[in-house]
Image 1 (cartoon, each protein chain N blue to C red):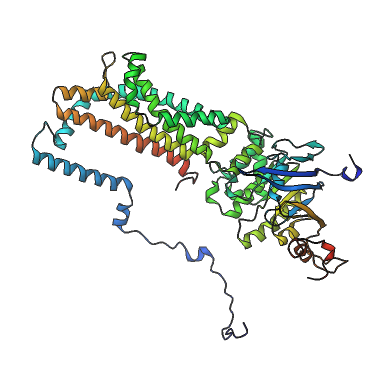
Image 2: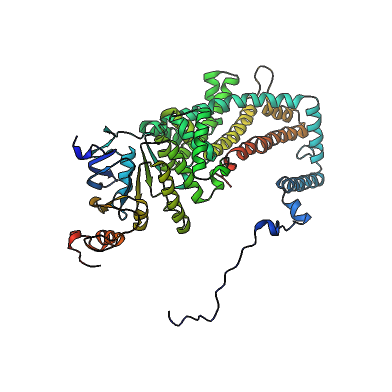
Length: 289
Length: 265
Protein backbone atom coordinates (compact mmCIF):
# COMPACT_ATOMS: atom_id res chain seq x y z
CA UNK A 1 0.00 0.00 0.00
CA UNK A 2 2.96 2.28 -0.50
CA UNK A 3 1.24 4.21 -3.27
CA UNK A 4 -1.73 5.37 -1.13
CA UNK A 5 -1.99 9.18 -1.41
CA UNK A 6 -0.78 11.05 1.70
CA UNK A 7 -1.23 14.62 0.50
CA UNK A 8 -3.85 15.48 3.14
CA UNK A 9 -2.91 16.75 6.58
CA UNK A 10 -4.26 15.05 9.73
CA UNK A 11 -6.42 17.01 12.11
CA UNK A 12 -7.91 16.66 15.60
CA UNK A 13 -10.92 18.67 16.68
CA UNK A 14 -12.43 19.66 20.04
CA UNK A 15 -16.01 18.49 20.53
CA UNK A 16 -18.79 20.98 21.22
CA UNK A 17 -20.47 20.00 24.53
CA UNK A 18 -24.16 19.13 24.14
CA UNK A 19 -25.46 21.94 26.37
CA UNK A 20 -23.80 24.52 24.11
CA UNK A 21 -25.92 23.83 21.07
CA UNK A 22 -29.23 23.08 22.81
CA UNK A 23 -31.88 20.70 21.54
CA UNK A 24 -32.10 20.20 17.83
CA UNK A 25 -35.80 20.04 17.13
CA UNK A 26 -37.88 19.97 13.99
CA UNK A 27 -41.58 20.65 14.72
CA UNK A 28 -44.26 18.51 13.07
CA UNK A 29 -46.84 20.11 10.82
CA UNK A 30 -50.46 20.19 12.02
CA UNK A 31 -51.42 17.51 9.50
CA UNK A 32 -48.61 15.20 10.63
CA UNK A 33 -49.72 15.65 14.22
CA UNK A 34 -53.37 14.86 13.48
CA UNK A 35 -52.40 11.88 11.35
CA UNK A 36 -50.30 10.61 14.27
CA UNK A 37 -53.34 9.85 16.46
CA UNK A 38 -54.47 6.23 15.98
CA UNK A 39 -57.95 6.83 17.38
CA UNK A 40 -58.50 9.72 14.96
CA UNK A 41 -57.53 7.58 11.96
CA UNK A 42 -59.79 4.75 13.14
CA UNK A 43 -62.63 7.14 13.96
CA UNK A 44 -62.42 8.52 10.45
CA UNK A 45 -62.66 5.03 8.96
CA UNK A 46 -65.70 4.25 11.12
CA UNK A 47 -67.37 7.46 9.96
CA UNK A 48 -66.77 6.52 6.33
CA UNK A 49 -68.25 3.05 6.91
CA UNK A 50 -71.29 4.54 8.66
CA UNK A 51 -71.79 7.00 5.79
CA UNK A 52 -71.67 4.16 3.21
CA UNK A 53 -74.20 2.18 5.28
CA UNK A 54 -76.51 5.19 5.60
CA UNK A 55 -76.31 5.97 1.88
CA UNK A 56 -76.94 2.39 0.74
CA UNK A 57 -79.81 1.83 3.21
CA UNK A 58 -81.48 5.11 2.17
CA UNK A 59 -81.17 4.03 -1.47
CA UNK A 60 -82.63 0.58 -0.65
CA UNK A 61 -85.39 2.13 1.49
CA UNK A 62 -86.51 -1.14 3.10
CA UNK A 63 -86.23 -1.21 6.89
CA UNK A 64 -87.11 -4.92 6.96
CA UNK A 65 -83.96 -5.83 5.04
CA UNK A 66 -81.52 -3.12 6.02
CA UNK A 67 -82.48 -0.26 8.34
CA UNK A 68 -80.40 2.90 7.94
CA UNK A 69 -77.56 3.75 10.27
CA UNK A 70 -79.62 6.53 11.87
CA UNK A 71 -82.57 4.21 12.53
CA UNK A 72 -80.26 1.63 14.06
CA UNK A 73 -78.65 4.29 16.22
CA UNK A 74 -82.07 5.48 17.38
CA UNK A 75 -83.17 1.96 18.27
CA UNK A 76 -79.84 1.43 20.05
CA UNK A 77 -80.16 4.64 22.10
CA UNK A 78 -83.76 3.99 23.09
CA UNK A 79 -83.03 0.37 24.11
CA UNK A 80 -80.04 1.55 26.13
CA UNK A 81 -82.14 4.29 27.72
CA UNK A 82 -84.86 1.89 28.89
CA UNK A 83 -82.14 -0.34 30.33
CA UNK A 84 -83.06 -3.41 28.31
CA UNK A 85 -79.84 -3.66 26.29
CA UNK A 86 -77.69 -3.00 29.32
CA UNK A 87 -79.49 -5.72 31.29
CA UNK A 88 -79.16 -8.21 28.44
CA UNK A 89 -75.51 -7.34 27.95
CA UNK A 90 -74.84 -7.86 31.61
CA UNK A 91 -76.51 -11.29 31.52
CA UNK A 92 -74.31 -12.24 28.56
CA UNK A 93 -71.12 -10.87 30.09
CA UNK A 94 -71.72 -12.64 33.40
CA UNK A 95 -72.03 -16.02 31.68
CA UNK A 96 -69.10 -15.18 29.46
CA UNK A 97 -66.77 -14.30 32.33
CA UNK A 98 -67.69 -17.51 34.10
CA UNK A 99 -66.84 -19.62 31.06
CA UNK A 100 -63.73 -17.59 30.30
CA UNK A 101 -62.41 -17.85 33.86
CA UNK A 102 -62.92 -21.60 34.10
CA UNK A 103 -61.46 -22.14 30.63
CA UNK A 104 -58.41 -20.06 31.51
CA UNK A 105 -57.68 -21.98 34.70
CA UNK A 106 -58.13 -25.35 32.97
CA UNK A 107 -55.87 -24.23 30.11
CA UNK A 108 -53.18 -23.20 32.58
CA UNK A 109 -53.39 -26.49 34.48
CA UNK A 110 -53.19 -28.46 31.25
CA UNK A 111 -50.17 -26.47 30.02
CA UNK A 112 -48.31 -26.77 33.29
CA UNK A 113 -48.91 -30.54 33.19
CA UNK A 114 -47.59 -30.50 29.64
CA UNK A 115 -44.42 -28.72 30.81
CA UNK A 116 -43.97 -31.08 33.75
CA UNK A 117 -43.85 -34.39 31.87
CA UNK A 118 -43.76 -35.95 28.45
CA UNK A 119 -47.07 -37.70 29.06
CA UNK A 120 -48.66 -34.37 29.95
CA UNK A 121 -47.22 -32.94 26.77
CA UNK A 122 -48.72 -35.79 24.74
CA UNK A 123 -52.04 -35.31 26.50
CA UNK A 124 -52.15 -31.62 25.58
CA UNK A 125 -51.10 -32.25 21.99
CA UNK A 126 -53.65 -35.03 21.49
CA UNK A 127 -56.51 -33.18 23.13
CA UNK A 128 -55.91 -29.93 21.27
CA UNK A 129 -55.49 -31.74 17.97
CA UNK A 130 -58.81 -33.52 18.54
CA UNK A 131 -60.90 -30.82 20.15
CA UNK A 132 -59.59 -27.47 18.92
CA UNK A 133 -61.07 -27.84 15.42
CA UNK A 134 -64.42 -28.93 16.88
CA UNK A 135 -66.79 -25.92 16.81
CA UNK A 136 -67.93 -25.22 20.34
CA UNK A 137 -71.49 -24.74 19.26
CA UNK A 138 -71.58 -28.34 17.98
CA UNK A 139 -71.31 -29.47 21.58
CA UNK A 140 -74.42 -27.56 22.63
CA UNK A 141 -76.95 -30.35 21.96
CA UNK A 142 -74.84 -32.71 24.07
CA UNK A 143 -74.44 -30.11 26.77
CA UNK A 144 -78.19 -29.65 26.90
CA UNK A 145 -78.70 -33.37 27.46
CA UNK A 146 -75.97 -33.56 30.11
CA UNK A 147 -76.49 -30.32 31.97
CA UNK A 148 -80.04 -29.30 31.13
CA UNK A 149 -81.54 -26.03 29.99
CA UNK A 150 -79.50 -23.62 32.02
CA UNK A 151 -76.44 -21.48 32.20
CA UNK A 152 -74.38 -24.56 32.99
CA UNK A 153 -74.75 -25.74 29.38
CA UNK A 154 -73.63 -22.43 27.95
CA UNK A 155 -70.71 -22.22 30.36
CA UNK A 156 -69.69 -25.73 29.35
CA UNK A 157 -69.63 -24.76 25.70
CA UNK A 158 -67.77 -21.55 26.49
CA UNK A 159 -65.09 -23.42 28.42
CA UNK A 160 -64.58 -25.60 25.39
CA UNK A 161 -64.33 -22.54 23.14
CA UNK A 162 -61.80 -20.76 25.36
CA UNK A 163 -59.64 -23.53 26.69
CA UNK A 164 -57.96 -24.91 23.56
CA UNK A 165 -56.75 -21.68 21.94
CA UNK A 166 -55.40 -20.41 25.27
CA UNK A 167 -53.74 -23.73 26.05
CA UNK A 168 -52.19 -23.94 22.58
CA UNK A 169 -50.81 -20.41 22.69
CA UNK A 170 -49.55 -20.69 26.25
CA UNK A 171 -47.85 -23.98 25.47
CA UNK A 172 -46.11 -22.65 22.39
CA UNK A 173 -45.12 -19.60 24.45
CA UNK A 174 -43.60 -21.81 27.15
CA UNK A 175 -41.71 -23.84 24.57
CA UNK A 176 -40.34 -20.63 23.07
CA UNK A 177 -38.75 -19.41 26.31
CA UNK A 178 -35.02 -19.19 25.60
CA UNK A 179 -32.72 -21.82 27.14
CA UNK A 180 -30.69 -19.00 28.72
CA UNK A 181 -33.67 -17.68 30.61
CA UNK A 182 -34.57 -21.17 31.79
CA UNK A 183 -31.01 -21.71 33.02
CA UNK A 184 -31.08 -18.36 34.83
CA UNK A 185 -34.25 -19.40 36.67
CA UNK A 186 -32.81 -22.74 37.70
CA UNK A 187 -29.51 -21.12 38.66
CA UNK A 188 -31.26 -19.18 41.40
CA UNK A 189 -32.96 -22.30 42.66
CA UNK A 190 -36.41 -21.93 41.11
CA UNK A 191 -38.27 -25.18 40.42
CA UNK A 192 -41.88 -26.28 40.07
CA UNK A 193 -44.64 -23.71 40.49
CA UNK A 194 -42.36 -20.75 41.42
CA UNK A 195 -40.33 -21.47 38.27
CA UNK A 196 -43.49 -21.42 36.14
CA UNK A 197 -44.85 -18.30 37.85
CA UNK A 198 -41.64 -16.25 37.92
CA UNK A 199 -39.93 -17.30 34.69
CA UNK A 200 -42.14 -19.15 32.23
CA UNK A 201 -45.35 -17.12 32.48
CA UNK A 202 -43.78 -13.65 32.21
CA UNK A 203 -41.33 -14.82 29.54
CA UNK A 204 -44.17 -16.32 27.49
CA UNK A 205 -46.51 -13.44 28.16
CA UNK A 206 -46.73 -12.14 24.56
CA UNK A 207 -48.00 -15.57 23.50
CA UNK A 208 -50.29 -15.91 26.49
CA UNK A 209 -51.83 -12.52 25.80
CA UNK A 210 -52.43 -13.47 22.17
CA UNK A 211 -54.13 -16.63 23.42
CA UNK A 212 -56.28 -14.62 25.82
CA UNK A 213 -57.40 -12.37 22.97
CA UNK A 214 -58.25 -15.26 20.66
CA UNK A 215 -60.00 -17.02 23.52
CA UNK A 216 -62.03 -13.89 24.23
CA UNK A 217 -63.15 -13.60 20.61
CA UNK A 218 -64.07 -17.29 20.43
CA UNK A 219 -65.99 -17.06 23.69
CA UNK A 220 -67.95 -14.00 22.62
CA UNK A 221 -68.92 -15.55 19.28
CA UNK A 222 -69.86 -18.83 20.84
CA UNK A 223 -71.94 -17.15 23.50
CA UNK A 224 -74.03 -15.12 21.07
CA UNK A 225 -74.51 -18.17 18.85
CA UNK A 226 -75.50 -20.33 21.82
CA UNK A 227 -78.01 -17.76 22.97
CA UNK A 228 -79.49 -17.58 19.49
CA UNK A 229 -79.90 -21.35 19.29
CA UNK A 230 -81.24 -21.69 22.78
CA UNK A 231 -81.83 -18.39 24.38
CA UNK A 232 -83.30 -17.76 27.72
CA UNK A 233 -82.62 -19.12 31.14
CA UNK A 234 -84.94 -18.30 34.01
CA UNK A 235 -86.67 -15.51 32.15
CA UNK A 236 -83.68 -13.27 31.44
CA UNK A 237 -81.84 -13.94 28.19
CA UNK A 238 -78.69 -12.31 26.95
CA UNK A 239 -77.80 -10.33 23.85
CA UNK A 240 -78.21 -13.28 21.49
CA UNK A 241 -81.70 -13.82 22.84
CA UNK A 242 -82.45 -10.11 22.40
CA UNK A 243 -81.50 -10.37 18.71
CA UNK A 244 -83.55 -13.54 18.25
CA UNK A 245 -86.62 -12.09 19.99
CA UNK A 246 -86.63 -8.90 17.93
CA UNK A 247 -86.19 -10.86 14.70
CA UNK A 248 -89.34 -12.79 15.60
CA UNK A 249 -91.35 -9.58 15.92
CA UNK A 250 -89.67 -8.14 12.82
CA UNK A 251 -88.19 -5.20 14.71
CA UNK A 252 -85.16 -5.17 12.43
CA UNK A 253 -83.61 -1.90 13.71
CA UNK A 254 -83.56 -3.51 17.15
CA UNK A 255 -81.85 -6.59 15.67
CA UNK A 256 -79.21 -4.29 14.27
CA UNK A 257 -78.99 -2.46 17.58
CA UNK A 258 -78.28 -5.80 19.25
CA UNK A 259 -75.52 -6.59 16.76
CA UNK A 260 -74.22 -3.08 17.27
CA UNK A 261 -74.02 -3.72 20.99
CA UNK A 262 -72.09 -6.98 20.42
CA UNK A 263 -69.59 -5.09 18.24
CA UNK A 264 -69.22 -2.23 20.71
CA UNK A 265 -68.53 -4.53 23.62
CA UNK A 266 -65.94 -6.34 21.50
CA UNK A 267 -64.26 -3.05 20.60
CA UNK A 268 -64.27 -1.83 24.19
CA UNK A 269 -62.70 -5.01 25.51
CA UNK A 270 -60.07 -5.01 22.77
CA UNK A 271 -59.17 -1.32 23.01
CA UNK A 272 -59.58 -0.67 26.71
CA UNK A 273 -58.76 -3.89 28.50
CA UNK A 274 -56.36 -5.77 26.23
CA UNK A 275 -54.65 -2.63 24.97
CA UNK A 276 -54.06 -1.44 28.54
CA UNK A 277 -52.65 -4.79 29.57
CA UNK A 278 -50.41 -4.72 26.51
CA UNK A 279 -49.09 -1.22 27.22
CA UNK A 280 -48.39 -2.00 30.85
CA UNK A 281 -46.65 -5.29 30.20
CA UNK A 282 -45.07 -6.44 26.97
CA UNK A 283 -44.67 -2.98 25.43
CA UNK A 284 -43.16 -1.53 28.58
CA UNK A 285 -40.80 -4.51 28.77
CA UNK A 286 -39.76 -4.15 25.15
CA UNK A 287 -41.03 -7.65 24.33
CA UNK A 288 -43.18 -6.19 21.54
CA UNK A 289 -42.61 -3.00 19.66
CA UNK B 1 -8.12 -36.33 49.39
CA UNK B 2 -4.66 -35.64 48.05
CA UNK B 3 -2.53 -32.88 49.50
CA UNK B 4 -2.04 -31.22 46.16
CA UNK B 5 -5.76 -30.55 45.85
CA UNK B 6 -6.33 -29.49 49.46
CA UNK B 7 -6.36 -25.83 48.49
CA UNK B 8 -8.70 -26.35 45.57
CA UNK B 9 -12.13 -24.72 45.64
CA UNK B 10 -13.41 -26.53 42.58
CA UNK B 11 -12.12 -29.94 41.57
CA UNK B 12 -12.92 -31.38 38.18
CA UNK B 13 -11.68 -34.98 37.95
CA UNK B 14 -11.67 -37.08 34.81
CA UNK B 15 -14.89 -35.57 33.50
CA UNK B 16 -16.32 -37.01 30.30
CA UNK B 17 -19.39 -35.25 28.98
CA UNK B 18 -21.67 -36.69 26.37
CA UNK B 19 -24.93 -35.57 24.90
CA UNK B 20 -27.41 -37.36 22.73
CA UNK B 21 -28.57 -36.26 19.34
CA UNK B 22 -31.18 -38.18 17.40
CA UNK B 23 -28.60 -40.38 15.68
CA UNK B 24 -25.73 -40.82 18.08
CA UNK B 25 -23.88 -39.87 21.23
CA UNK B 26 -21.55 -36.91 20.92
CA UNK B 27 -18.60 -36.77 23.29
CA UNK B 28 -18.02 -33.13 24.20
CA UNK B 29 -15.10 -33.61 26.56
CA UNK B 30 -12.95 -36.64 27.38
CA UNK B 31 -11.49 -37.13 30.88
CA UNK B 32 -10.83 -33.49 31.63
CA UNK B 33 -9.30 -32.68 35.03
CA UNK B 34 -8.39 -29.37 36.59
CA UNK B 35 -8.47 -27.59 39.94
CA UNK B 36 -9.59 -24.02 40.55
CA UNK B 37 -8.21 -22.33 43.65
CA UNK B 38 -9.84 -19.50 45.60
CA UNK B 39 -9.48 -16.11 43.86
CA UNK B 40 -8.35 -17.79 40.64
CA UNK B 41 -9.23 -16.23 37.32
CA UNK B 42 -9.32 -19.60 35.64
CA UNK B 43 -9.82 -19.51 31.88
CA UNK B 44 -11.03 -22.41 29.73
CA UNK B 45 -9.65 -21.69 26.27
CA UNK B 46 -10.09 -23.61 23.06
CA UNK B 47 -11.52 -23.51 19.56
CA UNK B 48 -15.21 -24.16 18.99
CA UNK B 49 -16.05 -27.81 19.49
CA UNK B 50 -13.70 -28.32 22.43
CA UNK B 51 -16.60 -28.58 24.84
CA UNK B 52 -15.60 -25.63 27.00
CA UNK B 53 -19.13 -24.26 27.29
CA UNK B 54 -20.49 -27.74 27.95
CA UNK B 55 -17.87 -28.14 30.66
CA UNK B 56 -18.96 -24.86 32.24
CA UNK B 57 -22.60 -25.98 32.16
CA UNK B 58 -21.58 -29.21 33.86
CA UNK B 59 -19.91 -27.19 36.62
CA UNK B 60 -23.13 -25.17 36.75
CA UNK B 61 -24.98 -28.42 37.37
CA UNK B 62 -27.06 -28.39 34.19
CA UNK B 63 -25.39 -31.45 32.67
CA UNK B 64 -24.37 -34.59 34.57
CA UNK B 65 -20.96 -36.07 33.63
CA UNK B 66 -21.05 -39.60 32.19
CA UNK B 67 -17.73 -40.23 33.90
CA UNK B 68 -15.73 -38.44 36.57
CA UNK B 69 -16.76 -36.03 39.30
CA UNK B 70 -17.07 -32.29 39.86
CA UNK B 71 -16.69 -31.12 43.45
CA UNK B 72 -17.19 -27.67 44.89
CA UNK B 73 -15.66 -27.31 48.36
CA UNK B 74 -15.49 -31.10 48.48
CA UNK B 75 -19.22 -31.55 47.80
CA UNK B 76 -20.22 -33.18 44.54
CA UNK B 77 -22.14 -30.96 42.13
CA UNK B 78 -25.48 -32.57 41.30
CA UNK B 79 -27.82 -29.77 40.20
CA UNK B 80 -27.85 -26.02 39.55
CA UNK B 81 -27.44 -23.90 42.64
CA UNK B 82 -26.89 -20.33 43.75
CA UNK B 83 -23.36 -21.12 45.01
CA UNK B 84 -22.27 -21.18 41.35
CA UNK B 85 -23.71 -18.26 39.41
CA UNK B 86 -23.60 -18.28 35.63
CA UNK B 87 -23.10 -15.20 33.48
CA UNK B 88 -24.05 -15.96 29.88
CA UNK B 89 -23.16 -14.47 26.53
CA UNK B 90 -26.78 -13.91 25.53
CA UNK B 91 -28.40 -10.61 26.43
CA UNK B 92 -31.70 -12.33 27.25
CA UNK B 93 -30.21 -13.62 30.48
CA UNK B 94 -31.75 -10.48 32.01
CA UNK B 95 -35.46 -10.78 32.65
CA UNK B 96 -37.05 -8.15 30.37
CA UNK B 97 -40.02 -7.65 32.69
CA UNK B 98 -37.82 -6.49 35.54
CA UNK B 99 -35.80 -3.30 35.91
CA UNK B 100 -32.05 -3.41 36.49
CA UNK B 101 -32.55 -3.24 40.25
CA UNK B 102 -35.36 -5.81 40.20
CA UNK B 103 -33.19 -8.17 38.15
CA UNK B 104 -30.47 -8.12 40.78
CA UNK B 105 -32.97 -8.32 43.64
CA UNK B 106 -34.77 -11.19 41.92
CA UNK B 107 -31.62 -13.30 42.12
CA UNK B 108 -31.18 -12.57 45.82
CA UNK B 109 -34.83 -13.18 46.67
CA UNK B 110 -35.48 -16.22 44.45
CA UNK B 111 -32.47 -17.95 45.99
CA UNK B 112 -33.69 -16.88 49.46
CA UNK B 113 -30.36 -15.21 50.26
CA UNK B 114 -31.85 -11.88 51.29
CA UNK B 115 -35.23 -10.23 51.13
CA UNK B 116 -36.81 -6.79 51.18
CA UNK B 117 -34.67 -3.87 52.22
CA UNK B 118 -31.52 -5.94 52.65
CA UNK B 119 -31.82 -7.32 49.13
CA UNK B 120 -32.38 -3.82 47.78
CA UNK B 121 -29.32 -2.43 49.57
CA UNK B 122 -27.10 -5.26 48.37
CA UNK B 123 -28.46 -4.90 44.83
CA UNK B 124 -27.80 -1.15 44.76
CA UNK B 125 -24.29 -1.64 46.14
CA UNK B 126 -23.37 -3.97 43.28
CA UNK B 127 -25.17 -1.90 40.66
CA UNK B 128 -23.02 0.97 41.90
CA UNK B 129 -19.89 -1.18 41.50
CA UNK B 130 -20.64 -1.55 37.78
CA UNK B 131 -21.52 2.19 37.64
CA UNK B 132 -25.14 1.75 36.61
CA UNK B 133 -26.78 3.55 39.55
CA UNK B 134 -28.36 6.04 37.16
CA UNK B 135 -30.04 3.18 35.29
CA UNK B 136 -31.29 1.19 38.29
CA UNK B 137 -34.93 1.74 37.34
CA UNK B 138 -34.48 1.20 33.59
CA UNK B 139 -35.77 -1.86 31.78
CA UNK B 140 -33.12 -4.01 30.07
CA UNK B 141 -34.37 -3.30 26.53
CA UNK B 142 -33.39 0.35 26.96
CA UNK B 143 -29.76 -0.51 27.75
CA UNK B 144 -26.82 -1.10 25.41
CA UNK B 145 -25.22 -4.52 25.10
CA UNK B 146 -22.32 -3.61 27.34
CA UNK B 147 -24.63 -2.25 30.01
CA UNK B 148 -26.71 -5.43 29.92
CA UNK B 149 -23.63 -7.53 30.51
CA UNK B 150 -22.63 -5.25 33.39
CA UNK B 151 -26.06 -5.84 34.95
CA UNK B 152 -25.60 -9.59 34.53
CA UNK B 153 -22.19 -9.36 36.20
CA UNK B 154 -23.61 -7.23 39.02
CA UNK B 155 -26.38 -9.79 39.50
CA UNK B 156 -23.86 -12.61 39.64
CA UNK B 157 -21.55 -10.80 42.04
CA UNK B 158 -24.38 -9.66 44.30
CA UNK B 159 -25.05 -13.33 45.02
CA UNK B 160 -21.49 -13.51 46.36
CA UNK B 161 -21.21 -17.06 45.05
CA UNK B 162 -18.33 -19.44 45.73
CA UNK B 163 -17.48 -19.24 42.06
CA UNK B 164 -18.65 -17.10 39.17
CA UNK B 165 -19.07 -19.01 35.91
CA UNK B 166 -18.74 -16.81 32.85
CA UNK B 167 -19.63 -18.24 29.45
CA UNK B 168 -18.03 -15.92 26.84
CA UNK B 169 -19.75 -12.94 28.49
CA UNK B 170 -18.18 -10.39 26.14
CA UNK B 171 -18.34 -12.31 22.87
CA UNK B 172 -21.47 -10.54 21.61
CA UNK B 173 -20.03 -7.05 22.24
CA UNK B 174 -18.20 -4.81 19.79
CA UNK B 175 -14.41 -4.72 20.06
CA UNK B 176 -14.16 -1.35 21.86
CA UNK B 177 -16.79 -2.27 24.44
CA UNK B 178 -15.28 -5.71 24.93
CA UNK B 179 -11.89 -4.22 25.74
CA UNK B 180 -13.46 -1.83 28.25
CA UNK B 181 -15.48 -4.61 29.89
CA UNK B 182 -12.35 -6.72 30.31
CA UNK B 183 -10.65 -3.85 32.14
CA UNK B 184 -13.71 -3.32 34.31
CA UNK B 185 -13.86 -7.01 35.18
CA UNK B 186 -10.21 -6.89 36.27
CA UNK B 187 -10.96 -3.79 38.37
CA UNK B 188 -13.87 -5.61 40.05
CA UNK B 189 -11.59 -8.54 40.72
CA UNK B 190 -9.01 -6.25 42.33
CA UNK B 191 -11.78 -4.99 44.63
CA UNK B 192 -13.30 -8.26 45.79
CA UNK B 193 -10.98 -11.08 44.65
CA UNK B 194 -13.84 -13.34 43.64
CA UNK B 195 -13.17 -16.71 42.02
CA UNK B 196 -14.12 -16.91 38.39
CA UNK B 197 -14.18 -19.68 35.80
CA UNK B 198 -14.14 -17.95 32.43
CA UNK B 199 -14.81 -19.53 29.06
CA UNK B 200 -13.51 -17.89 25.89
CA UNK B 201 -12.25 -18.72 22.42
CA UNK B 202 -10.19 -15.53 22.20
CA UNK B 203 -6.50 -15.89 23.02
CA UNK B 204 -5.96 -12.16 23.78
CA UNK B 205 -8.97 -12.19 26.10
CA UNK B 206 -7.69 -15.30 27.90
CA UNK B 207 -4.28 -13.71 28.36
CA UNK B 208 -5.74 -10.46 29.61
CA UNK B 209 -8.21 -12.00 32.04
CA UNK B 210 -6.66 -15.23 33.28
CA UNK B 211 -4.06 -16.03 35.89
CA UNK B 212 -4.30 -19.68 34.88
CA UNK B 213 -5.30 -20.89 31.42
CA UNK B 214 -6.50 -24.37 30.55
CA UNK B 215 -6.08 -25.19 26.86
CA UNK B 216 -8.52 -27.66 25.39
CA UNK B 217 -8.20 -29.43 22.05
CA UNK B 218 -11.34 -30.08 20.02
CA UNK B 219 -13.42 -33.17 19.11
CA UNK B 220 -13.66 -34.21 21.86
CA UNK B 221 -12.31 -31.67 24.32
CA UNK B 222 -9.15 -32.89 26.04
CA UNK B 223 -6.68 -31.03 28.19
CA UNK B 224 -3.75 -29.83 26.11
CA UNK B 225 -1.92 -27.72 28.68
CA UNK B 226 -2.40 -25.60 31.75
CA UNK B 227 -0.44 -22.35 31.72
CA UNK B 228 0.26 -19.52 34.14
CA UNK B 229 -0.36 -15.98 33.07
CA UNK B 230 0.36 -12.61 34.65
CA UNK B 231 -1.71 -10.62 32.20
CA UNK B 232 1.27 -9.14 30.33
CA UNK B 233 1.76 -11.65 27.52
CA UNK B 234 5.31 -12.23 28.87
CA UNK B 235 8.01 -14.17 27.05
CA UNK B 236 8.58 -17.72 28.20
CA UNK B 237 12.03 -18.18 29.77
CA UNK B 238 12.67 -21.55 28.08
CA UNK B 239 11.52 -20.82 24.52
CA UNK B 240 11.63 -17.01 24.42
CA UNK B 241 8.16 -16.91 22.90
CA UNK B 242 5.30 -14.72 23.91
CA UNK B 243 2.42 -16.45 25.69
CA UNK B 244 -0.10 -15.69 22.95
CA UNK B 245 2.21 -17.25 20.35
CA UNK B 246 2.77 -20.33 22.49
CA UNK B 247 -0.97 -20.77 22.93
CA UNK B 248 -1.61 -20.19 19.25
CA UNK B 249 0.92 -22.83 18.28
CA UNK B 250 -0.47 -25.35 20.72
CA UNK B 251 -4.04 -24.85 19.59
CA UNK B 252 -3.75 -24.37 15.86
CA UNK B 253 -0.32 -24.91 14.31
CA UNK B 254 0.51 -28.10 16.11
CA UNK B 255 -2.90 -29.67 16.29
CA UNK B 256 -1.62 -33.28 16.21
CA UNK B 257 1.90 -33.46 17.65
CA UNK B 258 3.41 -32.70 21.05
CA UNK B 259 3.75 -29.01 22.01
CA UNK B 260 7.49 -29.55 22.72
CA UNK B 261 8.08 -30.59 19.11
CA UNK B 262 7.49 -27.04 17.88
CA UNK B 263 10.70 -25.07 17.45
CA UNK B 264 9.74 -21.88 15.77
CA UNK B 265 6.54 -20.27 14.62
